[in-house]
Length: 127
Image 1 (cartoon, rainbow, N blue to C red):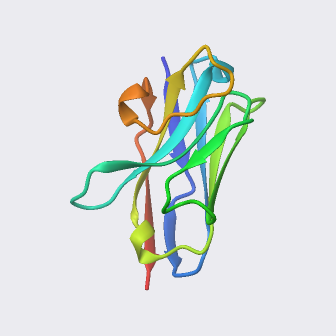
Image 2 (image 1 turned 90 degrees about the vertical axis):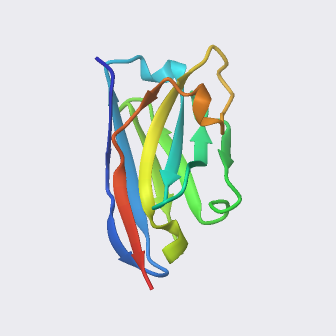
């Protein structure tokens, strides 16, 4: 049974930082591109960042580029999202997702490509 379990969410002030983690189990982690998405209240789920199977390729939404960093530790089957300089617009539920691919260096921004999803972790940024 595949499980993606996010952690690290919480309440932070504007300008603060959070580090999200997503621990994967029940799958061969190294054959999956991993992504982070978020869904704000009343809005659709949108892409935040993605990282290729061995971490050589990363991609970011414009809203995340320069402030967020995605990384992965394949030995721990875990993907991370370091979020800095946060603003109230970053308030959302953050989800990690796994996309199975034969390509070592590919990332995906389309949520429809992803095979598995976590339950999400709430992030709130106060002004």
